[in-house]
Length: 123
Image (cartoon, rainbow, N blue to C red):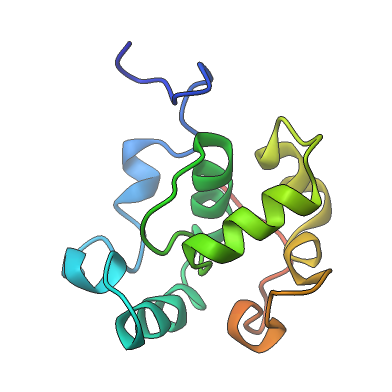
């Protein structure tokens, strides 16, 4: 069904919000690359105005490729494993911000948290 995630929920981000992403014009090889390209992509996400919405989209949609919201695929999988009961990542991130991501092992805070990354403002 168009306009829904594999979970059956509507996407977190609207098309208008997605155009505000810092990666909107980036080379897909950067956002879906490996090794150093993943680290570059994660750094690009640090200042993005839709970062938390992007992360919620990837977590709710179980996206297993590419850098979304500044997290690498293995970091998102680790986060989902640590919080298996979460069915609405958007609501959790709106309530608790990036502190949700920074807790636990396997996630490096220096990679994830940029100045001002505490709440999602969907715009």
